[in-house]
Length: 211
Ligand code: MN3
Image 1 (cartoon, protein in one colour):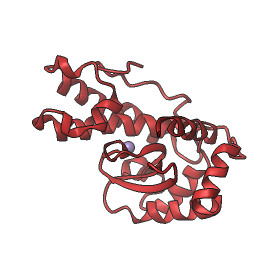
Image 2 (cartoon, rainbow, N blue to C red):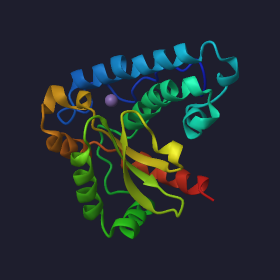
Image 3 (cartoon, rainbow, N blue to C red):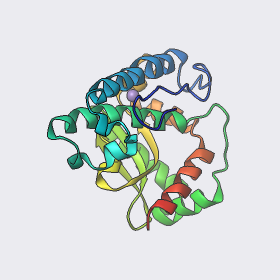
Image 4 (cartoon, rainbow, N blue to C red):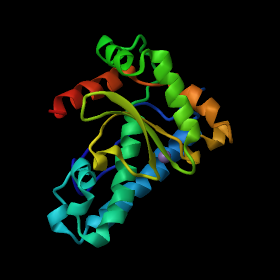
């Protein structure tokens, strides 16, 4: 995929039905082909008249909102965020269970939360507490500690200096066709299709980025 304008919607790294029965085919198709595609199209439309911004990556567009022209700060936060958050969400899922969690990440989770189960319980409670549309994130903070955070709408942790390790989309479009109002069941199903090898790689690259 292009790292800058014009952004493209990368294909899913698995088929639409690959995450059945945990996440259904129709949800994946609409989520990728319609929701994510709309953010890609909107972002390209916003950047079209601004050649000076067209060389910036998603991370660069999102890390310093105040560096952008004031009229573009909110539209870019919403649409570059929508692109970044969805690509990251899809990239951390897999139809092939890959437990146990790699040692590097597993040790970091134990150091920060006490145990994997404590992290999982905490993440589930946090995800259930999100009011309205948003995401729950596992992030690395400036002290190289793993932490959970909530972002509203398509906001990202990048603008507040956190490095993303894993995210969970809790907008209703991510689960309503299959799980209806049962967000709790969606969270449990999502835990069954997490690509822990990829999450471990995300953690390692975050460790390298934070001085
Ligand atoms: Mn979504």
